[in-house]
Image 1 (spheres, rainbow over the protein chains, first blue to last red):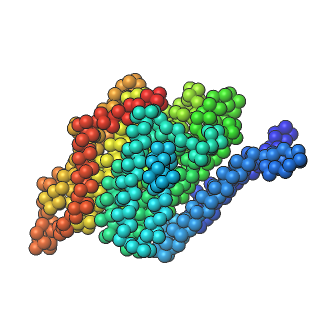
Image 2 (cartoon, helix red, strand yellow; image 1 turned 180 degrees about the horizontal axis):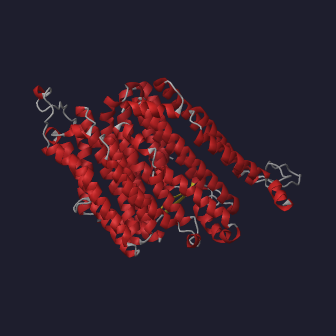
Image 3 (cartoon, chains in turn green, purple; image 1 turned 90 degrees about the vertical axis):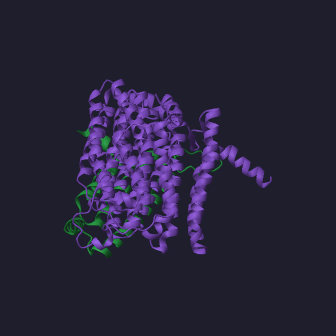
Length: 124
Length: 509
C-alpha cells in the first residue's frame, strides 16, 4: 500500500494530469452548456500539456541555457517547446469555438445543446 | 545568383517543402489581395493550385526516377530536424489532393458567388488553400509533432469552410465537428506524449526502430497510445460509431466545401493512420492486439449502417453525406485486410471515391444553383432539364454501385480479391450487400430524374413541368464533365493510377 502511494507520489505530475484529463473529458461530455463544453476541452488540453511538459522535467536540473564554467545538468527542452506550439493551437481552437458559440447564440437564442436539438427537431 | 537560378534551385532541391509552403503562403496573401482587388482572389487561388500541380508533377518525376525523396528541413539531420518523406503513398495522396481540389475550386469559384456573401468570399479561398496545404503536409510529413500541427490546421480550416455560410445549421454543425475533432487531436497529442516518453524520438522511422525494443520494456504505454491514436483517427475519418458529426457538417456546408470534405479530408486521416500502423507501431504488437480485426468489424458496420441511413434521407446532400460514411468503410476495410490486393483496393478507393463523391456533391450543388431544389422527391423530371448534370450524377451513381467500366468497380474488385486472399469471405458478403444497398438508394434518384413525371403539381402547371431552371454556367459544367470523364477513364484504364499504388503497397508490406 505504502509502496503504491510512494510510486504515485513520485509520479505526481502524471497522476494530476490524468485526473485533470478525466475532469475535462467528463465536463465536455456531460454538460449541455456550450461554454462549459469549451471549458472542459481546455481543461483536457491543459492536462495533456502538463503531461507532455513533465516528461522532459527532471528534479534539480535547469533549463538548457549554457553558462561557461558552470557545471550543470540540463532538462530536455523539446517537450516544452512543442507544448508552446500546442498552447497556441489550443488557444486558436478555443477562440474559434467561442466565436461559433456567439453565432449560435445569435441564431438560436440559447447556449444549451439540448435546447438547440429540440429547436432543430421541431423545425423539421 | 540570378532569379532563374534561384527558381531552378527551388524546384530541384526544395520541391517537397515548396508544395506545402507555397500553398500556405498564397493562402495568407489572399486576404491582402481581397482588400485590393476582390475579383482576383478566385483566379489567384486557382493559379496557385495549378503551380502546385507543376511542383507535384516534378516531384513525381523525381520519385519515379530516383526513388522516395527524404527532405530535411533547414538541412538539420534526421533525429533532430523535421523530415518530409515523399514515398509512393505520399505521392499518390499529393496527386489525388492536387487534382481533385483544383477541379472543385474551379467549380466553386462560380458556385460560391450565389452561396456566400461577397464580404467573406475572399476569405473562403484562404481557408480552402489552408486546407489543401495542410492535407498535403499530412500526406508527406515524417514527424509526429509536425503531423499534429497539420491535423489542427486541417480541422480548423475544415470547420471554417463549413461555418463560413453562417446560417444556423452550418454554424451548429461546424461547432459539433470542431469539438469532436478537438477531442480527436487531444487523444493524438496524448498518445504522442506517451510514445515520446519511452522513445525520445518524434521522427516516424527513428520512433519505429526505438519501439521495437521499447515494446518489451513498456508495453502498456504502447497499447494505450495505440488506443488513443485509433480513437483520434476514427473520429476524424468518421468511421461508424464516431461518425455523428459528419452528416450535419457535410450536408449543410456550401457544395464545394462538401465535395472537398467528403472527397478528400476524411481520407487523409485514413492514410496517416495507415502510415502510423505500418511504419511506427511494431508488428509484434498486433500479435497480441487484434486491431486489424477490430478495424474490419468497424469498417463493415460503417459500410452497412452508412448505406441504411442513406436510404431514409430526403435531402440529397444529406444522403450523399451518409453514403460517404459507407465509402470510408471501404478504405478502412482495405487497411484492415492488410494484404496486397486489399490494401491496393482500399487506396484505389481513396482516389476513386474522391472523384465520384466530389462529382456527386458538385452535381447536387449544380442542381441547387440552377433550381434551388434539395429534396430528393422534387427531382422528378429534372434529367431532361439538366441533362449534363444528371448524366454525370448517373455516372457517379453507377460508380458508387460498382458497375463495370466505372472506377468504383475496379476498387471493389481489388477489395473483393483481398477478402478472399485473407481467407475472410464474410467481408466479401459485406461488399456485395453494400453494392446492392447503394443501388437501392442511388438508382431511384436517377430513374426519377429521367423518367419521373410530376403528378401533384396542379398549381404549378403553368410553369412547364413545375421546375424553373437557370442555365448552368460553363465554369461549372466543365469541372463536372472532367470528373465524370475521370470516373470512366480510371474505370477503363486503371493502370495509370495502379502503377503508383502497387509500388506504395510493396513498400508497406
